[in-house]
Image (cartoon, one colour):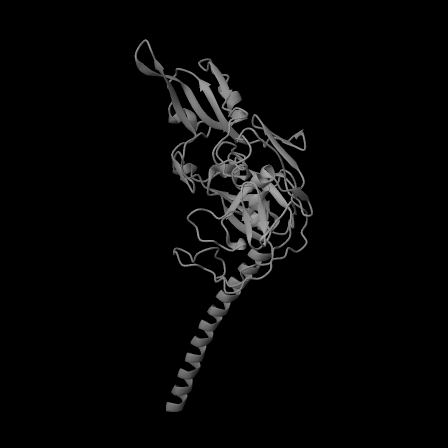
Length: 389
């Protein structure tokens, strides 16, 4: 009797151990499968800032295809699976740089084309962040304006590529002044999806605000209109109201330098008047002078794997020797956000190296409004399963 009871207890313990092992095996399999899918095919991505509105909106969740441009082999193989920079909910790094490998890109379905919406690693070192390896830098999403060898020019907000007008994204936004003395409230602007005060990764965002001018007669400030950030389609609707006295785009004048604009050390460029600027391609050679250093010096210093680079406004040294020309080792891209006056993009920090490309944004699978009018409108159903163009 004792032996039978002992054997039964042993069988029960073995059964429990097997069940636990099966559960652990299932979890391990799921983690490995999800990691492989994320690495080899598609990766989920959330829109954190309004730089691509109205094409992509804060709260959109989308899938990014790594197959289109080719899978990039990891530079930092020692990572906690399914993490990016930190372990979930902590400030603990989720990776180790003890091993850093050369990065290669496998053949893809296509190359990057003008107009593609691309996810990439933010190229320069973001202030306040650790110096992450290339494959762990912060993810950005923008529209590709210029591919390697293209000449990009912006004239009064109009983008030209190789001298030809580039198509304007259908849902792109920019800033307008609407002239009116009518007092408009939040309800009016919400009808057109012009919403204020939501917080993004770049901080609070303002889509509309009243503008006033000092009235000499009354000695008070008087409403003259509103500055709004919206699409051309909405502007056409606004123009139909009888109490709107005029609508004008707000454009920075040509020749007026804007602080922080890329190349501003040698050129009087701003966000609305920029270039012409040639996008570097692999094998392209440029002379070294004050003008080329202003736009290509950061590339030579940061992304070309050169050692002992010293860049000054008038000269570049590599390995202790001054150079008079330079030949690029990889391709580069010029990216811009569709929200043209509220986007941190290539106009401010320069080119995206080929080895920083993550993949092509293909479709939105979910969209959650960060500031819904009510609980019934929390999900933007019209955006669910929308393809990205």
